[in-house]
Image (tube, rainbow, N blue to C red; front, side, top):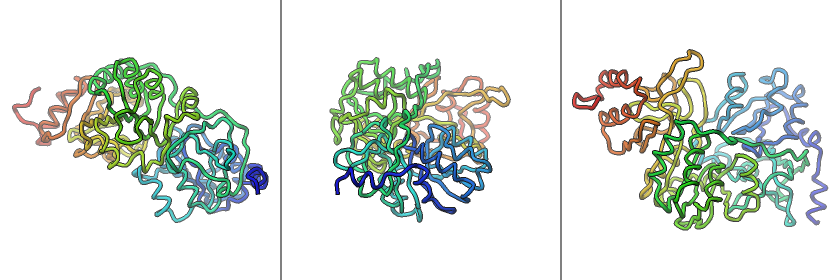
Length: 448
């Protein structure tokens, strides 16, 4: 049978395809820009027929239709591997929950731990002449999802970029149960152009001089990493490499400026390696059929042992709060959920262990509390009760705010307290010193 004949035999409308979902099922909605659209709308239309459908997904870039059905919590429960702002709001609405993970292990969770995935739904690029559907910029864990699901439904989108990779970034038509042709919407954009703040630029000016020629980079999303990426693109750095969890627009800017060659990488030489990507249309156009860019499973991209083999590995991530012991939270402030662990722990450790490696946690020294209108410090004596720790105090390497940068590797508690208070907002330093004295991590000889 030809692939085209098989394709036509498996072709269904979205309404027909979602009939396979039953009450009590576990359904997988893929990840980030691979989240289904037409299938989601069709499933939402069936909401009154269904109860207790539990869904896995993560990093939503637009609000799914199932979130807006009447009495949504009776019909659907969202379980996120990593939270976006859309999912944070859904937590407050009472039908969404976070699944704490080590992101590097997510493929193995599906293969070894998750007991049930009844239906997998995901957006893919059109089938090629060999019968393969590409996952687009979502190498992450989708192959494992498809391997373990009882039913696999692909939603073809002609706008999905075809992203080359090493392995596990395609599914063959023989392994697909149903095919849906959607309305080919534009791929959701995320983290579009932003104007760097004075704080972003101050942090970037502190971090970029620490990056040597030939370094290999991992960046997160946000205005601060974007500012760092823009500054790198405008620098005279050369022969940089990319080995990252998330591929963002800043890498495109660096590559087009001639800063990236990957020539110094010990493996995947000359290629930009990533687990998933999300950004502007510029990014999707750059990734499409680009052999320099390599989409891989997150178990490969985020593997600590692999990352630690890359000399001069530079990891740049953000934080919500840091305490005087050097504990980092990037997930919550108290019990208020904000994000997820993602791969921060993996890359912090990988860079920490690499020869010449540097792990940077970057954040503003303070923030304005929207409820009270008061300025508050991100560097705290201790974490607020209920705060989730993302990177432990034993893993913190460099911390950077607009007031400076400190390397806490090897520092005792009183040395850390002095160093961290030294880059806190000046308004809070005396208060932090007083608290450090109460906690017995301050010496009389410390500088004030």
